[in-house]
Length: 245
Image (tube, rainbow, N blue to C red; front, side, top):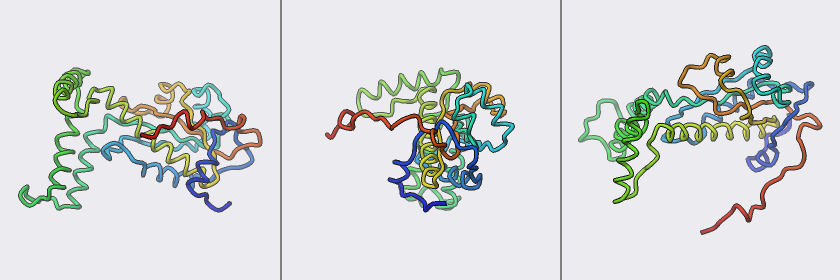
């Protein structure tokens, strides 16, 4: 295998590959390493409301392909990775952060002995996170929204507190993980294609995902075929999207 690419090289190398070379298999252990790097992506409040399903079974991939509308990126893929949001696990993930603090600061430290940093962190995961994520049929979220709008008249506040707002947060951070994964794969000389065009309900049933799980995207994996990239890269001129203030 060629030497691993730098970050800049990997970003330039990465393209959405639509056709993979069937004669060039990829190592599932390397893909797994790249998924582990995906889990190091920045994410909102370190809640890590994601899961990654690494599909190596040819039978499962064959079942998923029609759910991706038989697009070439799915049909010719060597492996697939499904990026999944788990907003429904917010209580467990907040508890995990608090347990991590116990190992860092000590479990039975009295409030008087706690540093200001520890107090802020424990208050954040013990009170602020439950306030942000807790909801019931959207009702609590609506009242939180009204409350924050009123408080926001007098001072800056976090306004995205409705159930759908927090759902968007989970999907944004899962997207960051997917990007980490694709750049990591490019660094190894492997190719990917993020696919949002799919029947997520059928894929969810096939993977037997719980009710609260949502599919963020599927990423197909392989090594590009000679005509695997559909044309030159196009981007809007940078000057049109860049503003310095």
